Each structure stands twice: as structure tokens, then as C-alpha cells.
Image (cartoon, rainbow, N blue to C red; front, side):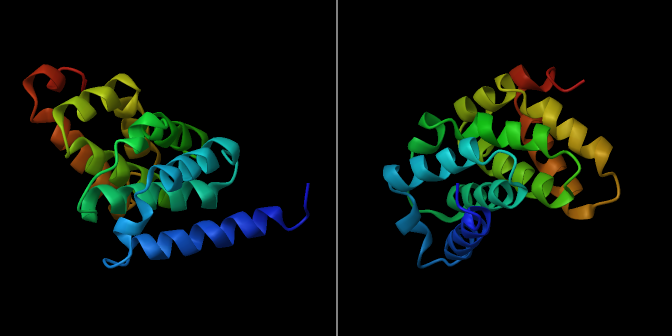
Length: 161
């Protein structure tokens, strides 16, 4: 609709990503409204790689550093949209690093969350990331971190083939 809309989306998401990396700002990004808006950006801008990278990074930071984890990330479909971002942008090592990091941090918070992510296809997406980017150390680290966390659960370890 607007010629500059993509640039505006990129700039806004980059600014939010920077805020999410600041310890004194992270908790300000955890309101249900903000989370719903972020996940809606993932849905509505699925072709925009930089929006997907930024949102995955924000989710990763929230699950790693926020003092209270909002359930609204899952309620808004955060897990499935991280997996979909991976499936749509498999060529992007940076996106896969951020997405695997987001999945790893989400899975580390609860067994139920981990089971939900496995059900949503996270293992297949992460395995594809390993195949597509076998020499990208940052992607390998986050992908293996997620898979290792899944392997610690006896009832989920068989899901990794």
C-alpha cells in the first residue's frame, strides 16, 4: 500500500530487537498487546526475512532474560510462527540461528512447551537447518541446543531420528 512500508517494518522491528537486547527494557516488551502485535507481524509479513529474524530474536530474548514469561507468546501462535519462518526462509542462516535460539529458549522453560514445539514440527525444521547450514557455527550451536534439550526428555527423545 505504501512504497516505504517494508522499510518502515524493517526499521520498527530492528528497533524492538535492540530494545529486547537491553536488560532494562526487556520486561517492557512482554505485555499481551505487544506480544500479539509481534506475532501478528510474523503472520502478516511472512515473506519479510528481516521481520522474521527480529521477531525470533525478540522471542529468544524474552524467554532468556524476562523476569516473567508471558503466556501470550504461545497463545498468539509464537511457536508455530517461528517454525513457519524457518520453513519459509531455510536459506537464511541468520534467521535459522535466531529461530533455533527462540525454540531452544522456549523449550527450556517447560516440558509442556517443549512437547508443544515438537508437535508443531520444530524437530523437522531444526534438522533441516542443520542440513542446510552445516558450516554455520552459530546456527549449529542453537540447533544442537534445542535438540539436546529435547533429548533430555525420555518421552520426546524418540522423536529425534
